[in-house]
Length: 106
Image (tube, rainbow, N blue to C red; front, side, top):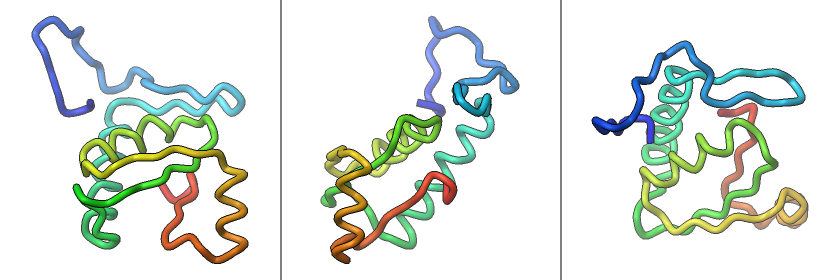
C-alpha cells in the first residue's frame, strides 16, 4: 500500500518507477501512484458512492493502472470481482453497466 511503512521495508525514493508498461515504456513512480490512488478513491467514494457494502466488478487488461485500481478498491472495502474486458464489452452493448471506467480516465 502506498501509505504504509514498516521498519524492515526499504526506503522508497519518489523518482524510482514502481510500474513500467512494457509496450509503451510508461513509468509510474511513487508520487504518481499515490496521487492516482487518492484521486480515484475520492472520486469513487464521493461521486459514485462506492463503499463497504457494495460489489465492484473490475474489467481491465494487464496495464500499469491495474495495481493502482486494486489499491483503490482495497481502500474503499467493497467486495471485488474481476473479469475480462470481453465481458465488459458485452455488458456495455446491452446497456447493463451502471458505471465503467477506462484506463485513460485514471
